[in-house]
Image (cartoon, rainbow, N blue to C red; front, top):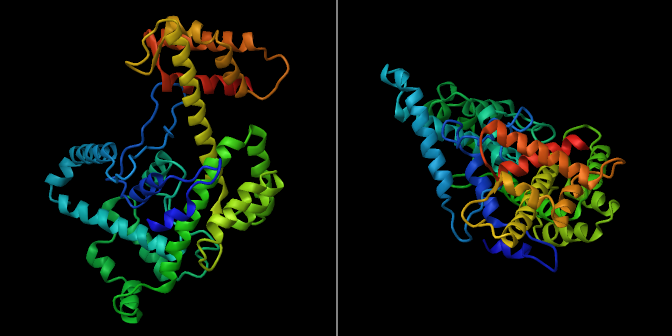
Length: 391
């Protein structure tokens, strides 16, 4: 924890939040049968039946995420009920499932130690869960180009999606790679390369979180596109990665030299581990976009509350907006300005016309659902969907 002091905030540049790092660490090693379910927004049309991408907030100083624990327990109970015929037949057992989950976690840890990043890393909680539930494991060059086939075989055997297809504990212990490591590695210590990879991963995670938080408040829509184009120009092999030094050069070229300098002084010079930090620039872009969307929602809700309170409405009971109040909030110039900010400048898109079309769409949604109000998060998702269709 003392290393975190090196990356605390300076001036108006925000720093990454340690709880998010713990949240990631808790999820990336979870077996799919124990991982929390993905939360989906139901019945909102094909474009909005998407994963909820909000970060889970954890109280400072607390590592127990009660909602996460509840989700895990509920998922496990549902799984046991679904598998009851198999369990009662004697083909498997509760103990076997728990041991298989441990084997999965060992495989995920081995993956991290070998290459320097976890197998199911992503910028947000539900994106991590989506990759876990799909069982996406790949040995990407150049990170795995010098890793032995035996090591890859061990990791693959541990990370089989179906728990009955994974190595048993004894099979894992008897794997040739493990036996060779046991014969050759010093007693009681880890390979130096393992520790180096852990340190690189920690440094890379800090850089990605810091960059995403700061750039979410700085990037415009056109900046995101320009950032992606420059990343792809540097990534000539199409690997999806570039170095932290490349990130600094891109940010400087885009007109953000102060952020590039902060990355250098706070991370690359503070954490002087040999080797480069490799950044997944698509994941970084996703993280920036998600944070911008969450910021949009929070700002919009603040102004919704202001407008509704000024008209005598009670908005403290629940974050929802009545159908009859939609006209009030869409008549506020600040709310209109926020909505129009989400649309690139285009001829023929006037404020009044956009607001009218949004109101019609939201009222139609209420009628189809036979409800008189919309949950604010659902309302924001619908707004963003319809704003996107206007671009």
